[in-house]
Picture (cartoon, rainbow, N blue to C red):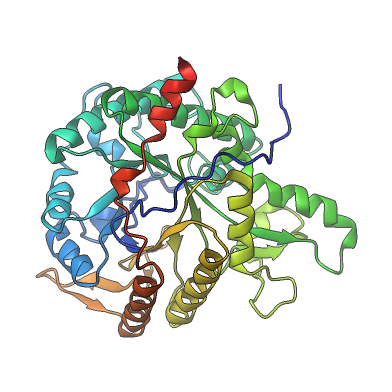
Length: 416
């Protein structure tokens, strides 16, 4: 039975750094299938697996010590219940050499062909694979890690279960898919904690702002209801919505928010499938909501630390967009919102999901045959400036990340 999501805050966590650096970079790692049946592999397409060592040296030189990566589940578990992590090993070694802190996506829009995402076996399979990866990773590094069990639950549920634009291309089953992915997330967390009690988790979804067009004031309530759906996955994980899924407040851990130039729009699209055609609200629009205000709402709702898990733009807007995000994050921090970092995503250009077009949205471009990547100088300059700024802003707040206990310790108390 559903119940209304509570807005009662959880205990405020200490404002100590959780991540090794305030700025980080993320490698596009999607592995879903197109309608043609072709499976994407963005790690291979950008040759990041081939040049991981050089990529991590580049990150290190830019002061980016936090990295988002994806485990390609379909390569790891080609045979049900048998795991081969050799495809991950070069990236693990490169990260170790650069003393980088990796946040690992276990399911980034792709899974093995022998699984049906709507069946109960998907839940148990993700949990067992997550447990196996955590055991393997700790043998390699000797340290607990950060994990994203399922990337962008709300977005993926809409795209794959409502709008039908992503594999498995179904409609009318979005909420069902969302509940399934939340259950898989919770079971995966428990499985990983059983072998790595100090593991940390980041639950990542886009934050959006949707308003009724002034031409359609009758749609105000529908627009607001639609806007609030962005919180459903987090509310389910926290046990505020559909508690029978097994959620609990401490499962939230870090809240990862993704924010792009197209994350705000008018509601009156006359059908969700027109999302490809809509025009995003400009920042000059009176209806545009400042990012600091969105962050404030997220923090007021959950009272957990926040990580900007993805942000970026394509082409020349890369620099001004990054500047805007940093200005808003800085303003939010000054009001007491515990934002622990900003991740440039993607950090390297990649081929488009649908058409393989060259997407100029990273800090670095495609590699040459020796692994060299040309850097986008305007974004590099902006990053350098904001690194200096936040270093000064956060000076004195240097408590070790190890001072923050894993939420697992809280869950152990709850279960006793």
